[in-house]
Length: 209
Image 1 (cartoon, helix red, strand yellow):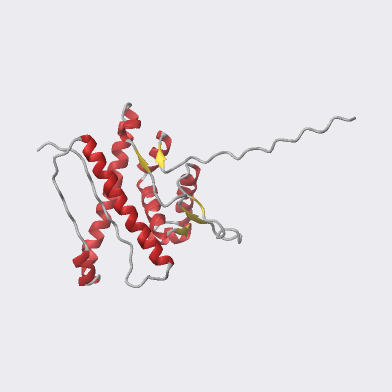
Image 2 (cartoon, helix red, strand yellow):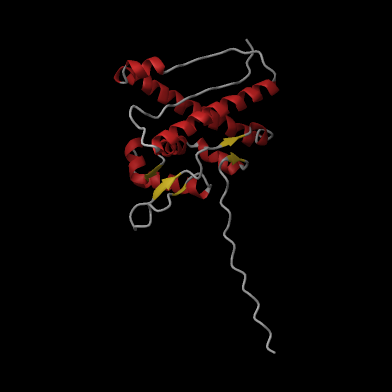
């Protein structure tokens, strides 16, 4: 009897870098570029968008925005939005998950290059957040009393151990996730009246008086 043909192995797709938890310095370096930080934040708020839409918001050339979106896609930070780019026109982009990205400083701080990258990313994120809060302060009177009375800027000085600070971070993240899920569920149910994007910043770090 003739030998049965061996089944051909199908090529396996190459896994994309996982952007939720950054473990590669090349990924972290992507956000030393303030424009990529800005585009990521705009796309996070929009849910999905084209390069032209993001370019209008950022007041940049669409070709420049497209270039940086492709670079972010190569590193796994953005993906094509399913079902929206198949008509042959401009690509729609979205984030691979709603959780954003994070990194642990100790993964990179053991080399001068890693430490410099951490500092550059941290400063860039801080400048982006400060710019957004300054914009709110400039426009606060246009939001009305309900929003300005609800808005807050708080600072607490606590005496904690590293383990307690980590526990506080976990608790605050759980609260933020609960409210994010609440907002998404409300929007899905059609409850959109008087609902807006809300930026919530919270820092926890040691200092010496």
